[in-house]
Image 1: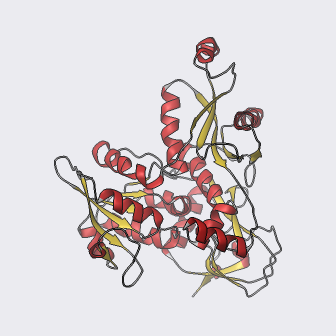
Image 2: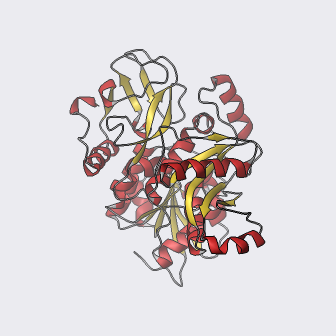
Image 3: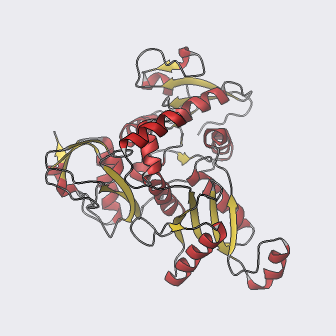
Length: 396
Protein backbone atom coordinates (compact mmCIF):
# COMPACT_ATOMS: atom_id res chain seq x y z
CA UNK A 1 0.00 0.00 0.00
CA UNK A 2 1.19 3.49 -0.81
CA UNK A 3 2.35 5.84 1.92
CA UNK A 4 0.92 9.31 1.55
CA UNK A 5 2.80 11.34 4.13
CA UNK A 6 3.65 14.79 2.89
CA UNK A 7 1.40 14.84 -0.14
CA UNK A 8 -2.27 15.09 -0.96
CA UNK A 9 -4.16 11.81 -0.87
CA UNK A 10 -5.91 11.28 -4.20
CA UNK A 11 -9.36 9.88 -3.49
CA UNK A 12 -11.36 8.22 -6.24
CA UNK A 13 -15.10 7.98 -5.59
CA UNK A 14 -17.47 5.39 -7.05
CA UNK A 15 -21.11 6.40 -7.20
CA UNK A 16 -23.04 9.66 -7.24
CA UNK A 17 -25.66 8.97 -4.60
CA UNK A 18 -26.05 10.90 -1.37
CA UNK A 19 -22.99 9.40 0.35
CA UNK A 20 -20.70 9.99 -2.61
CA UNK A 21 -21.94 13.55 -3.22
CA UNK A 22 -21.51 14.44 0.44
CA UNK A 23 -18.02 12.97 0.56
CA UNK A 24 -17.01 14.84 -2.60
CA UNK A 25 -18.09 18.16 -1.11
CA UNK A 26 -16.24 17.35 2.11
CA UNK A 27 -12.98 16.33 0.43
CA UNK A 28 -13.06 19.33 -1.91
CA UNK A 29 -12.44 21.56 1.12
CA UNK A 30 -9.82 19.46 2.92
CA UNK A 31 -6.13 20.35 2.96
CA UNK A 32 -4.82 16.76 2.98
CA UNK A 33 -6.99 15.14 0.30
CA UNK A 34 -8.15 15.80 -3.22
CA UNK A 35 -10.77 14.19 -5.43
CA UNK A 36 -9.11 12.38 -8.32
CA UNK A 37 -12.21 11.37 -10.27
CA UNK A 38 -15.80 10.30 -9.61
CA UNK A 39 -16.88 7.16 -11.43
CA UNK A 40 -20.51 7.18 -12.52
CA UNK A 41 -22.72 5.15 -14.83
CA UNK A 42 -24.86 8.21 -15.54
CA UNK A 43 -24.54 10.18 -18.73
CA UNK A 44 -24.38 13.97 -18.99
CA UNK A 45 -24.60 16.59 -16.27
CA UNK A 46 -25.53 15.72 -12.68
CA UNK A 47 -27.14 18.90 -11.43
CA UNK A 48 -26.95 18.17 -7.68
CA UNK A 49 -23.36 16.88 -7.66
CA UNK A 50 -22.08 19.72 -5.48
CA UNK A 51 -18.59 19.81 -7.05
CA UNK A 52 -17.27 20.44 -10.54
CA UNK A 53 -18.69 18.27 -13.32
CA UNK A 54 -15.11 17.84 -14.52
CA UNK A 55 -14.57 15.23 -11.82
CA UNK A 56 -17.10 12.90 -13.45
CA UNK A 57 -16.05 10.03 -15.68
CA UNK A 58 -17.45 6.78 -17.02
CA UNK A 59 -13.91 5.40 -17.41
CA UNK A 60 -13.05 3.01 -14.58
CA UNK A 61 -9.38 2.78 -15.55
CA UNK A 62 -9.00 6.57 -15.58
CA UNK A 63 -10.19 6.75 -11.96
CA UNK A 64 -7.82 4.01 -10.84
CA UNK A 65 -4.79 5.46 -12.64
CA UNK A 66 -5.23 8.73 -10.73
CA UNK A 67 -6.15 7.40 -7.25
CA UNK A 68 -4.31 6.41 -4.06
CA UNK A 69 -7.51 5.02 -2.56
CA UNK A 70 -10.98 4.26 -3.87
CA UNK A 71 -14.19 4.90 -1.91
CA UNK A 72 -17.14 2.78 -3.05
CA UNK A 73 -20.75 3.49 -2.13
CA UNK A 74 -23.23 2.39 -4.78
CA UNK A 75 -25.80 0.11 -3.15
CA UNK A 76 -25.36 -2.21 -6.16
CA UNK A 77 -23.29 -5.16 -4.99
CA UNK A 78 -22.96 -6.71 -8.43
CA UNK A 79 -21.53 -3.54 -9.94
CA UNK A 80 -19.39 -2.68 -6.90
CA UNK A 81 -17.81 -6.14 -6.88
CA UNK A 82 -16.65 -5.68 -10.45
CA UNK A 83 -15.21 -2.23 -9.72
CA UNK A 84 -13.42 -3.30 -6.54
CA UNK A 85 -11.90 -6.38 -8.12
CA UNK A 86 -10.61 -4.18 -10.94
CA UNK A 87 -9.17 -1.68 -8.43
CA UNK A 88 -7.10 -4.48 -6.93
CA UNK A 89 -5.44 -5.12 -10.30
CA UNK A 90 -4.08 -1.57 -9.94
CA UNK A 91 -3.03 -2.17 -6.33
CA UNK A 92 -5.50 0.50 -5.14
CA UNK A 93 -6.93 -0.11 -1.63
CA UNK A 94 -10.68 0.26 -1.20
CA UNK A 95 -12.84 1.86 1.49
CA UNK A 96 -16.52 0.97 1.32
CA UNK A 97 -19.65 2.42 2.77
CA UNK A 98 -21.44 -0.45 1.13
CA UNK A 99 -22.53 -3.20 3.52
CA UNK A 100 -24.53 -4.71 0.63
CA UNK A 101 -21.31 -5.55 -1.20
CA UNK A 102 -19.36 -6.54 1.90
CA UNK A 103 -21.95 -9.15 2.93
CA UNK A 104 -22.24 -10.62 -0.57
CA UNK A 105 -18.66 -10.65 -1.86
CA UNK A 106 -16.52 -8.93 0.78
CA UNK A 107 -14.92 -12.16 2.00
CA UNK A 108 -13.95 -13.11 -1.55
CA UNK A 109 -12.66 -9.59 -2.26
CA UNK A 110 -10.61 -9.45 0.96
CA UNK A 111 -8.44 -12.27 -0.39
CA UNK A 112 -7.62 -10.21 -3.49
CA UNK A 113 -6.75 -6.80 -2.13
CA UNK A 114 -7.02 -4.36 0.74
CA UNK A 115 -10.62 -3.55 1.66
CA UNK A 116 -12.30 -2.08 4.73
CA UNK A 117 -15.76 -0.84 5.58
CA UNK A 118 -15.70 2.80 6.67
CA UNK A 119 -16.61 4.31 9.98
CA UNK A 120 -19.81 6.34 9.76
CA UNK A 121 -22.52 3.83 8.92
CA UNK A 122 -23.82 1.50 11.63
CA UNK A 123 -21.43 -1.45 11.07
CA UNK A 124 -18.35 0.76 11.04
CA UNK A 125 -19.51 2.73 14.06
CA UNK A 126 -20.12 -0.53 15.95
CA UNK A 127 -16.64 -1.76 15.03
CA UNK A 128 -15.10 1.49 16.28
CA UNK A 129 -17.16 1.38 19.49
CA UNK A 130 -16.11 -2.25 19.97
CA UNK A 131 -12.43 -1.24 19.96
CA UNK A 132 -13.16 1.27 22.72
CA UNK A 133 -15.14 -1.03 25.00
CA UNK A 134 -12.68 -3.93 24.62
CA UNK A 135 -9.82 -1.63 25.65
CA UNK A 136 -11.81 -0.73 28.80
CA UNK A 137 -12.13 -4.38 29.75
CA UNK A 138 -15.78 -4.90 28.85
CA UNK A 139 -16.95 -8.23 27.40
CA UNK A 140 -19.63 -7.57 24.77
CA UNK A 141 -22.74 -9.74 24.61
CA UNK A 142 -24.79 -7.76 22.09
CA UNK A 143 -23.78 -5.65 19.13
CA UNK A 144 -26.94 -3.68 18.54
CA UNK A 145 -28.49 -1.47 15.90
CA UNK A 146 -31.27 0.95 16.80
CA UNK A 147 -34.26 1.04 14.47
CA UNK A 148 -36.90 3.71 14.98
CA UNK A 149 -39.52 2.22 12.69
CA UNK A 150 -40.06 -1.00 10.75
CA UNK A 151 -42.69 -2.02 8.21
CA UNK A 152 -41.75 -5.20 6.37
CA UNK A 153 -44.23 -4.62 3.55
CA UNK A 154 -44.75 -0.89 3.03
CA UNK A 155 -46.98 0.49 0.27
CA UNK A 156 -45.54 2.01 -2.89
CA UNK A 157 -47.52 5.20 -2.20
CA UNK A 158 -45.90 5.62 1.23
CA UNK A 159 -42.42 4.92 -0.11
CA UNK A 160 -42.80 7.45 -2.94
CA UNK A 161 -43.93 10.05 -0.39
CA UNK A 162 -40.99 9.46 1.95
CA UNK A 163 -38.47 9.26 -0.87
CA UNK A 164 -39.51 12.71 -2.06
CA UNK A 165 -39.70 14.12 1.46
CA UNK A 166 -36.30 12.82 2.59
CA UNK A 167 -34.43 13.19 -0.70
CA UNK A 168 -33.50 9.52 -1.02
CA UNK A 169 -34.09 7.13 -3.89
CA UNK A 170 -37.21 4.98 -3.79
CA UNK A 171 -35.15 1.80 -3.38
CA UNK A 172 -33.12 3.29 -0.52
CA UNK A 173 -36.18 4.38 1.44
CA UNK A 174 -37.82 1.02 0.87
CA UNK A 175 -34.74 -0.90 2.06
CA UNK A 176 -34.61 1.29 5.20
CA UNK A 177 -38.30 0.82 5.93
CA UNK A 178 -38.67 -2.93 5.30
CA UNK A 179 -35.56 -3.71 7.36
CA UNK A 180 -33.39 -5.04 4.53
CA UNK A 181 -30.63 -2.50 5.12
CA UNK A 182 -30.68 -3.25 8.86
CA UNK A 183 -30.45 -6.99 8.24
CA UNK A 184 -27.50 -6.49 5.88
CA UNK A 185 -25.70 -4.24 8.34
CA UNK A 186 -26.06 -6.69 11.21
CA UNK A 187 -24.99 -9.62 9.06
CA UNK A 188 -21.80 -7.69 8.28
CA UNK A 189 -21.29 -7.05 12.00
CA UNK A 190 -21.80 -10.77 12.72
CA UNK A 191 -19.25 -11.81 10.10
CA UNK A 192 -16.75 -9.05 10.73
CA UNK A 193 -16.72 -9.33 14.53
CA UNK A 194 -17.20 -13.11 14.61
CA UNK A 195 -20.49 -13.20 16.52
CA UNK A 196 -23.79 -15.01 16.04
CA UNK A 197 -27.31 -14.37 14.81
CA UNK A 198 -29.72 -16.16 17.12
CA UNK A 199 -32.47 -16.79 14.59
CA UNK A 200 -33.54 -15.94 11.05
CA UNK A 201 -34.23 -12.21 10.90
CA UNK A 202 -32.79 -11.71 14.42
CA UNK A 203 -34.88 -10.94 17.51
CA UNK A 204 -35.56 -7.24 17.00
CA UNK A 205 -36.75 -6.41 20.52
CA UNK A 206 -39.43 -3.70 20.46
CA UNK A 207 -39.35 -1.32 23.41
CA UNK A 208 -40.00 2.21 24.64
CA UNK A 209 -37.04 1.91 27.02
CA UNK A 210 -33.63 1.79 25.31
CA UNK A 211 -31.81 0.22 28.24
CA UNK A 212 -34.54 -2.34 28.85
CA UNK A 213 -34.33 -3.48 25.23
CA UNK A 214 -30.54 -3.68 25.29
CA UNK A 215 -30.58 -5.70 28.51
CA UNK A 216 -33.34 -8.00 27.22
CA UNK A 217 -31.16 -8.91 24.24
CA UNK A 218 -28.22 -9.49 26.59
CA UNK A 219 -30.31 -11.97 28.59
CA UNK A 220 -31.21 -13.79 25.36
CA UNK A 221 -27.54 -13.93 24.39
CA UNK A 222 -26.44 -15.13 27.83
CA UNK A 223 -29.13 -17.84 27.87
CA UNK A 224 -27.92 -19.10 24.48
CA UNK A 225 -24.28 -18.90 25.56
CA UNK A 226 -23.47 -16.70 22.57
CA UNK A 227 -22.40 -13.17 21.63
CA UNK A 228 -24.94 -11.82 19.15
CA UNK A 229 -25.62 -9.22 16.48
CA UNK A 230 -29.19 -7.92 16.75
CA UNK A 231 -31.33 -4.79 17.02
CA UNK A 232 -34.06 -3.01 18.91
CA UNK A 233 -37.05 -1.08 17.58
CA UNK A 234 -37.62 2.07 19.58
CA UNK A 235 -38.97 5.43 18.42
CA UNK A 236 -37.68 7.07 21.60
CA UNK A 237 -34.05 5.95 21.28
CA UNK A 238 -31.16 7.77 19.58
CA UNK A 239 -30.49 6.79 15.94
CA UNK A 240 -27.19 5.13 16.67
CA UNK A 241 -25.68 1.83 17.82
CA UNK A 242 -24.99 0.15 21.14
CA UNK A 243 -23.07 -2.63 22.83
CA UNK A 244 -24.43 -4.45 25.86
CA UNK A 245 -21.56 -5.91 27.84
CA UNK A 246 -20.47 -7.39 31.15
CA UNK A 247 -17.38 -6.57 33.20
CA UNK A 248 -15.45 -8.11 36.06
CA UNK A 249 -17.51 -8.19 39.26
CA UNK A 250 -14.94 -6.50 41.50
CA UNK A 251 -15.18 -3.34 39.37
CA UNK A 252 -18.96 -3.06 39.68
CA UNK A 253 -18.78 -0.33 42.39
CA UNK A 254 -16.58 1.83 40.18
CA UNK A 255 -18.84 1.36 37.16
CA UNK A 256 -21.80 2.38 39.31
CA UNK A 257 -19.89 5.50 40.37
CA UNK A 258 -19.56 6.39 36.68
CA UNK A 259 -23.34 6.10 36.20
CA UNK A 260 -23.39 2.76 34.38
CA UNK A 261 -25.73 1.14 36.89
CA UNK A 262 -25.58 -1.93 39.09
CA UNK A 263 -24.68 -4.50 36.44
CA UNK A 264 -24.27 -7.29 35.53
CA UNK A 265 -25.14 -5.73 32.13
CA UNK A 266 -23.78 -2.38 31.00
CA UNK A 267 -25.01 -0.29 28.08
CA UNK A 268 -22.48 1.60 25.98
CA UNK A 269 -23.69 3.43 22.92
CA UNK A 270 -22.97 6.03 20.31
CA UNK A 271 -26.05 8.13 19.55
CA UNK A 272 -24.98 9.18 16.04
CA UNK A 273 -23.69 7.72 12.80
CA UNK A 274 -22.53 10.48 10.50
CA UNK A 275 -21.94 8.46 7.33
CA UNK A 276 -19.69 10.26 4.82
CA UNK A 277 -18.43 12.75 7.43
CA UNK A 278 -16.50 9.89 9.04
CA UNK A 279 -15.03 8.37 5.88
CA UNK A 280 -11.90 10.60 5.73
CA UNK A 281 -10.82 9.28 9.13
CA UNK A 282 -11.04 5.73 7.83
CA UNK A 283 -8.98 6.69 4.77
CA UNK A 284 -6.23 8.11 6.98
CA UNK A 285 -6.25 5.07 9.28
CA UNK A 286 -6.00 2.75 6.29
CA UNK A 287 -3.24 4.57 4.40
CA UNK A 288 -1.14 5.71 7.36
CA UNK A 289 -1.67 2.82 9.82
CA UNK A 290 -2.77 -0.07 7.57
CA UNK A 291 -5.89 -0.34 9.74
CA UNK A 292 -8.78 -2.49 8.56
CA UNK A 293 -11.72 -1.26 10.63
CA UNK A 294 -14.17 -3.96 9.53
CA UNK A 295 -14.56 -6.47 6.76
CA UNK A 296 -16.77 -9.52 6.19
CA UNK A 297 -14.25 -12.02 7.54
CA UNK A 298 -12.33 -14.60 5.53
CA UNK A 299 -15.09 -17.23 5.86
CA UNK A 300 -18.53 -15.71 6.59
CA UNK A 301 -21.22 -17.55 8.54
CA UNK A 302 -24.06 -15.04 8.08
CA UNK A 303 -25.82 -13.88 4.93
CA UNK A 304 -29.03 -12.08 4.01
CA UNK A 305 -31.63 -14.24 2.30
CA UNK A 306 -34.35 -13.11 -0.10
CA UNK A 307 -37.89 -13.28 1.32
CA UNK A 308 -41.06 -12.78 -0.75
CA UNK A 309 -43.19 -9.85 0.41
CA UNK A 310 -46.18 -11.01 -1.59
CA UNK A 311 -47.24 -13.86 -3.85
CA UNK A 312 -44.89 -13.90 -6.84
CA UNK A 313 -46.01 -15.81 -9.89
CA UNK A 314 -43.81 -18.11 -11.94
CA UNK A 315 -42.26 -16.14 -14.80
CA UNK A 316 -42.10 -12.90 -12.79
CA UNK A 317 -39.01 -10.72 -13.15
CA UNK A 318 -37.41 -9.28 -10.01
CA UNK A 319 -35.36 -6.41 -11.38
CA UNK A 320 -33.70 -5.55 -8.06
CA UNK A 321 -33.81 -7.23 -4.67
CA UNK A 322 -32.62 -4.55 -2.25
CA UNK A 323 -35.30 -1.88 -1.97
CA UNK A 324 -37.86 -3.90 -3.94
CA UNK A 325 -41.62 -3.90 -3.47
CA UNK A 326 -41.54 -7.66 -4.15
CA UNK A 327 -38.88 -9.00 -1.79
CA UNK A 328 -36.94 -8.06 1.34
CA UNK A 329 -33.89 -9.39 3.16
CA UNK A 330 -33.52 -11.40 6.36
CA UNK A 331 -30.25 -12.29 8.07
CA UNK A 332 -29.64 -16.03 8.24
CA UNK A 333 -26.91 -18.48 9.16
CA UNK A 334 -25.50 -19.87 5.90
CA UNK A 335 -25.30 -23.43 7.22
CA UNK A 336 -29.03 -23.31 8.04
CA UNK A 337 -30.02 -22.20 4.52
CA UNK A 338 -27.11 -22.97 2.18
CA UNK A 339 -29.26 -22.75 -0.98
CA UNK A 340 -30.74 -19.33 -0.21
CA UNK A 341 -30.39 -16.51 -2.74
CA UNK A 342 -28.49 -13.61 -1.16
CA UNK A 343 -30.61 -10.52 -1.73
CA UNK A 344 -27.62 -8.70 -3.22
CA UNK A 345 -27.65 -11.21 -6.09
CA UNK A 346 -31.39 -10.83 -6.70
CA UNK A 347 -31.05 -8.72 -9.83
CA UNK A 348 -32.82 -9.38 -13.15
CA UNK A 349 -33.98 -12.68 -11.68
CA UNK A 350 -36.76 -14.77 -13.24
CA UNK A 351 -38.87 -16.98 -11.00
CA UNK A 352 -39.20 -20.57 -12.17
CA UNK A 353 -42.08 -21.29 -9.79
CA UNK A 354 -44.72 -19.40 -7.83
CA UNK A 355 -43.50 -18.20 -4.43
CA UNK A 356 -45.81 -17.48 -1.50
CA UNK A 357 -45.58 -14.47 0.88
CA UNK A 358 -42.93 -14.94 3.56
CA UNK A 359 -41.22 -17.75 1.66
CA UNK A 360 -37.44 -17.88 1.43
CA UNK A 361 -36.29 -17.93 -2.21
CA UNK A 362 -33.63 -20.49 -3.18
CA UNK A 363 -31.44 -20.97 -6.24
CA UNK A 364 -33.81 -23.75 -7.32
CA UNK A 365 -36.51 -21.09 -7.71
CA UNK A 366 -34.75 -18.64 -10.04
CA UNK A 367 -32.66 -17.95 -13.08
CA UNK A 368 -30.20 -15.06 -12.84
CA UNK A 369 -27.61 -13.58 -15.20
CA UNK A 370 -23.98 -14.56 -14.86
CA UNK A 371 -21.84 -12.06 -12.92
CA UNK A 372 -18.51 -11.84 -11.13
CA UNK A 373 -20.46 -11.44 -7.89
CA UNK A 374 -22.25 -14.75 -8.49
CA UNK A 375 -18.91 -16.48 -9.14
CA UNK A 376 -17.58 -14.92 -5.93
CA UNK A 377 -20.59 -16.18 -3.96
CA UNK A 378 -20.17 -19.72 -5.30
CA UNK A 379 -16.52 -19.69 -4.24
CA UNK A 380 -17.50 -18.33 -0.84
CA UNK A 381 -19.96 -21.19 -0.36
CA UNK A 382 -17.20 -23.70 -1.08
CA UNK A 383 -15.05 -22.03 1.57
CA UNK A 384 -17.94 -22.28 4.04
CA UNK A 385 -18.08 -25.99 3.24
CA UNK A 386 -21.21 -25.96 1.08
CA UNK A 387 -21.82 -26.98 -2.52
CA UNK A 388 -22.26 -24.04 -4.90
CA UNK A 389 -25.63 -23.44 -6.63
CA UNK A 390 -26.30 -25.58 -9.68
CA UNK A 391 -25.29 -24.15 -13.04
CA UNK A 392 -28.88 -24.12 -14.27
CA UNK A 393 -29.58 -21.08 -12.09
CA UNK A 394 -27.56 -18.95 -14.50
CA UNK A 395 -29.54 -17.25 -17.26
CA UNK A 396 -27.40 -16.87 -20.36
